[in-house]
Structure formats: C-alpha cells, structure tokens
Length: 253
Image (cartoon, rainbow, N blue to C red; front, top):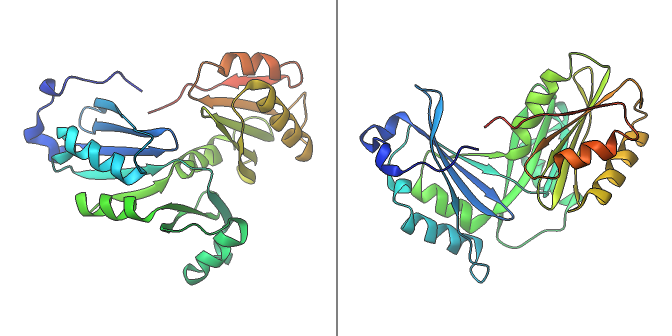
C-alpha cells in the first residue's frame, strides 16, 4: 500500500469523486482514499488502536481524530478481515437459514451481526460476523457503506487466475497471525480456509499438509504466495524444498 499522503495535497472539495475504504482487522484499522479518475490512491493511513478500548470505541476515536473521515465520498467500503467465516454452495444458500449455517461451525458470540457475500465465480456464499456495535456505528456515520469480507475479493480473483496454467493452484495470503489458503482446480474451488500461525515453521506444516490432502502434484502444480509481511521470500524458499513451482505475487491495492 502506498505511503500516507499529506491531506493538504488532496482536494476535499472533490471528495464525492473519491472512494473511502476502511479495513477492519484483528490488528486494528487502516483507511485509504482512492481516486478512480486518476486510478491512484491519494491517502492511506493506519488507525491507532488502544488495547484497553473496545473495537467500537477505537473506531469512534478514529472518526474524531481523523478529519478526512468526516467528508462525503462517492462510495465507502468496509473490508472485514477475520478468521470467523465459513463457506457454503450458492445453490444451497437460504438467507433465513444463514445463522444456522454459520453457528454450526462457530460458537455464538454476544453482540455480533452476521453478514454474507455472494461469490458467483466460485459458486459459493461466504458467511462472516462483525461486532454489532461497530456495524451500527459505521452505518450511522456512512449510511451507504458496503461491507465485504476481505476473503471475497481474493477468492473471486483467484478463481479467474487459476483457470490458466497448471491444473491445480494453491494461493496463500499471509497475515501477521493467520494464513488464508485458497486452492483451485482449473477455476473450481477445492478449499478455502484460514489457519492460525505466526511463524514459517507452522506455515510450512499447514501448507504441506493441505497440499497432501488435496492430492496436489509436487512437480506439476503451483503454489502462489501473497499478502503482507517480510517472511514471504523466506517462506517461498522453504516451500521450494518440497514444491517445484512456487511464486510470489506482489499485492495489488
């Protein structure tokens, strides 16, 4: 993501031409403003998180301290990054049964809102949860805000990319404490899951175990690594001891 830009270089009289994105992660928040006319980011900013405050209190504080959040934008998107998601086939999904599907896999939590995204390229629906008070606060501040799981856009992109090249592809998206694994066979989703791990030894274990479970070919199939963190190159080198085709994808904003 680009370095943060001085707000004095942004013409906020034209804010209604821009797109505001809010990323909600377990590590905190980040904000970006995108100018679709110039196809460029004009501002990115990390939100400071105080651990003694609730997630909603931290967001309220950000809205008070970061004046660019008070402007009106063409579009506001909230990207929810969390392990608390589950996937199901699109043709079996019924909105009135969403809670039953989701809580079959997760224990209920107090004060949470259940959301879902449709993934047409994957033929699936992803169900995910967000703190209800945070959800309500963001809707109050930005009534037209659109929520989406951070997994959704990656899954749709990988579904298209995986149709080209080798028969099977595994995509690994790195976070500080979590890895997300997407596996495809010629565009058809085989697996989408997330694993808690914060070091390369654990990452290698989970990836090779998943690779074996999916009967992927060490000589023919491809593993692609993307996401944040300085461990990507080291992880790629370690995986290459076992898998021939390993590539690093630079993240696209």
